[in-house]
Length: 213
Length: 152
Length: 256
Image (cartoon, rainbow over all chains, first blue to last red; front, top):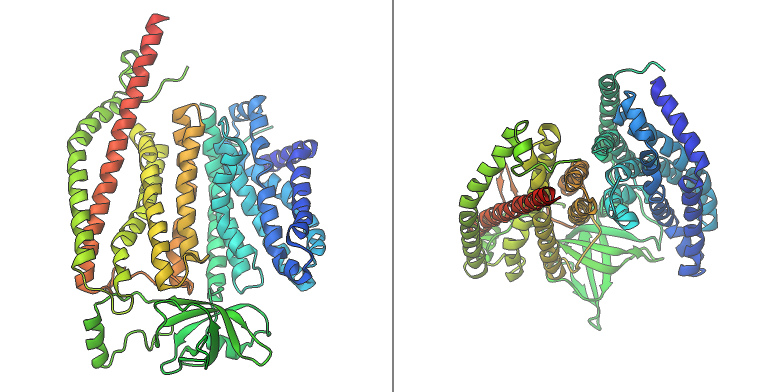
């Protein structure tokens, strides 16, 4: 437990030093919210109705950004090897990354979401369920990022490959999360995210081990 | 730093993952209790009338004997029922093959200011029964009309 | 230096004789079985579809359109079943490290993707006249599309790793995670009111008239045998390909 906390703290400190993993996704997310009104036109009612969906798609696409550096940097400079040689299970490393990403990517995202919602003129009563959905969604998206980041370790293919791996698995969450006022949808979004989060450390850990050859 | 053996770390994580999975299962079961249906039935609408102009999907069976056309023949009028409540619908457009009395339909549209449901899109839903026409006729003769009595 | 898992390397043979012997026996077994599977599969499928198209009665409600059932339903079954098989193979490869299990992930994926594509296309053609739409974004249809995309993801992941053994492992983990999608497909029709009708064939019996069920089952058997046959063909190709690479490597080693 202490080990996990130490690793999470390390990962968060690293993230703070790599704005590409949290500031870029954040900027991307806000830009999506900013661009859509231009693309759709000034129909306020339409924008307000589309807002939850736009924010979800923005969050989803933003979550793809940190994937490529998630484990690759630690793998390239040998940190990953070092930690594993010292008896830290790959699963623990993956779990720590998952939690760190949830806090480091999901936290700023949740703070930015009300701003983005305002920009799109979303009715205020929609905001709490949307934020609850995004909180769960950020967990699920972080889990998918950990899975995608570890299985593509050492692969060619880049962003397109990551999108192909992450987006299909994110569809159920998107479906439930982007209509958070429907009865039961929030619960299902949370359940899907939790399932992914439960699996991610093991899939990620196994892939990290396989990446060492 | 004293570190637990990798095996122990994995065990702790596995227990945590199991707990999360169980929690997810419980959340899912509760969520499924009042889950979002693909469409609303007429009795849902009677219980909770949606605002005029709000787009909803209305689903149910086409009430027998309710199908008619407007004088110019362009607008189809019929009643959707779930055996508990009825909602009259009008629709202007191409009607799918399977649109029949006593068969399932899903109409996407909204209520106008006078409380009449105007469908923009009309989809037919069929059931999981497949049989030749003669068999269906025989069943009907014996008092088991297909499609009726089962609110989808 | 990493050694590819399969193929006879005299110097390396001692530690994993077992894993080495099995692919050879498998190769013989597969060579004998493949033509039977393909021929019988084609035969059953042809008879099933032919009887479905020309002899089975039309549906009381859908009329002649129902006949696409004889292709749509089997492809849906084995797209899902194939995915389950692929995930189980990946699990077996992970637990027992058996090289054939890892290889069968690669063998199954494109065949499963093909079946999923057939299911989506025929379903769409069927949906237009009966429901009145090519496509709706409901649980059943969407989750089948997700299944198709998962197959594509597995294939893409295998090929994006230069180290083939590693690519297979990574794709296997992805396949296992993807099984989370299967229950969603299954329950989407049971729990939601979707546009798609519920399953007609369950443990408790079938709601398809026997005259229509019989060609369906024949066609399904054909699809199953064809699926297995195509997977075996791919397995043999992949094993042969690995052997060739081995030979080239050995020759290079001897020359250098």
